[in-house]
Image (tube, rainbow, N blue to C red):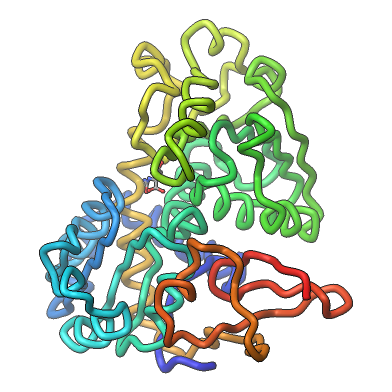
Length: 360
Ligand code: NCD
């Protein structure tokens, strides 16, 4: 199913060349932000945030304002017609007739793709449940390019809630496309990286190992990407409490890290990095958040300038088959076509919205 507009739902819908162009533009903007002050004069961006956000929402808004554009939107769906039961389809259809570009964050996987199916303008995925977060990845890639000088030949540790952390899913899928990157996944057995991410890493020829403790990995890393345990994505409070406080990066652990290792974190931080690490020159998470504005300025400019139709659904609808993931948009918005890719010998289906797999 084709859409007339160019959306950013999943970075892997594009080539690394396209990402590189955005990163290079982001670097140029960083070096001369005022040179881009009129790039989006007269354009309107709508931000539809169905889930809390500080950085992503404000950096998108700042990005559009710094490009000369204007912003509309909501950050609390209970103040909009969503609270009266309006579908994602109707909200998207209406708001996209007011704006030139729509940025959406939603608590369930595949929501941005679902929205793009009916939108009358480009849609950017600003985080869909525990699934993907492509614009955080553009931010992370820009940060690595500036602070490490390269996107290849890196040993990257990812620590914390790897099963629910959408930022690490998107980052792994992207950075495994560059040469000679290795991953060390640091998590409890319950919070390991999902199979759909590991499969992409393997298909891209990168390698990963899984360890239980930070101590086993920290001395080998060029980049340590810390994540928060995502309380809101656990089925029960007991399950969350069993995982809470497992990984804490402090000054003592930093003693074992390389002198040029950098620490990234998409933020917000809860307690997984102690505040005394903030003054370590290797702590790069606040700088990373600042670079998010440049990455998003580059993305907005690119999407608004290069309109081309995109194929949103490539698979097929299997009669009566539903996605098994209760946190998939197709189980919340009934009208959406339940579309799957088939893999292997045809008995494995992957949901085209949230990537969850099922055997038939
Ligand atoms: C993250 C998110 O919302 O996925 N933050 C962000 O967008 N910068 C990380 C998180 O919530 O833990």
